[in-house]
Length: 392
Ligand code: ATP
Ligand code: MG
Image 1 (tube, helix red, strand yellow):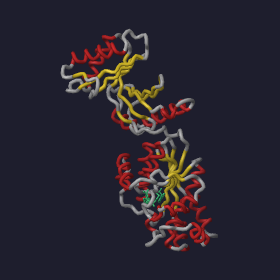
Image 2 (cartoon, helix red, strand yellow; image 1 turned 90 degrees about the vertical axis):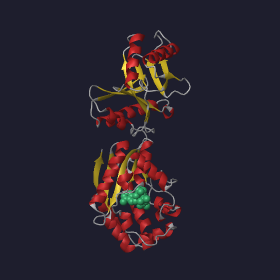
Image 3 (cartoon, helix red, strand yellow; image 1 turned 180 degrees about the vertical axis):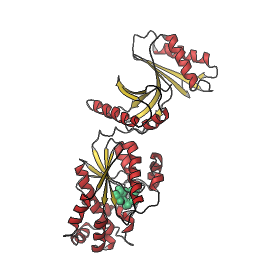
Image 4 (cartoon, protein in one colour; image 1 turned 60 degrees about the vertical axis):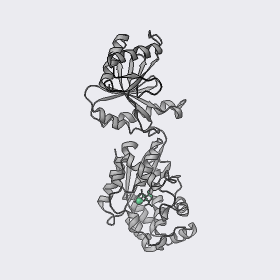
């Protein structure tokens, strides 16, 4: 029973007039996700349900994988849609379909019939009993358990009759595109891809900025970030990735400012430049992978100083996460293996031996005055020479 998928979504957040927007975005994103899968999938909305079906040959395993990454899907079920040709014909099909899946196993089951079309001649109780009986006759190895069945057989009587048994989990969340847009500061590490994933999960479309420092950071380091963006985009959809050449800004800071403040000042300039692209892309916020206390630049005082350089809100979805919690998510979403590839990062190259852990904003700002007169031009050039690629 795998010609069509019935797609279930959480309905709590989508009452009233938002519901249509939500559903339309979800249909669009499902189409997009299935477009990359072999087969000609048709996605349609019907009676408050979404169905995706392929005509003829299609890669159903690939489709399952794609659907498991579309935010907004709570669960999806491979479903058989049958025309109503009377009970006997329905029972025959049900017996056949169950035979193809768990009919030959020693399992307990329960039939859950729903009659959404009230002119059907049997009510749901009668259907449950009659279909249960047919299955027991056909497969003596099965047993009914109405309290804790191992398998469910769902039968929904509508215009057509939907029969399904297997329910696969979706990723939850809201459809990307229903909650605005935000700009992720994406490094090659473990944290920032996870941060992007979590914000996209709430329906936010992503842009991303990567600060590259050639020749101190290699093309392979850059490729790693592109690869990470691709992995995140399997969930987040299209991402506009801005690759900023940050070397000259970093060198100027390195040559001019106290070395224990390097990281903070550098991070403040990252915010300023990221914000430029965020505004250009009509983002309403920035996103980072920071977590309290993870490193010197992520103490409360450091975060205060970094925040101060941005005017947009800065979302830090990992702020209260332990590293292991973040690693667990990165493994789950498939970014971990790429994140741990050992390429240099621009932050680790220009790093002080003893960075301040409790920077004071007034002192940082005072140090930054030393940059006045030359940094503006360097920031401008960094912005002008930025390479933007669309990740799909
Ligand atoms: P990440 O996991 O993602 O590398 P991290 O633990 O290495 O984080 P930092 O290097 O202090 O921590 O960076 C903190 C955050 O700053 C990152 O999560 C990311 O959002 C941003 N960031 C750091 N380096 C870069 C970079 N080269 N380009 C873009 N953003 C960066
Ligand atoms: Mg990093």
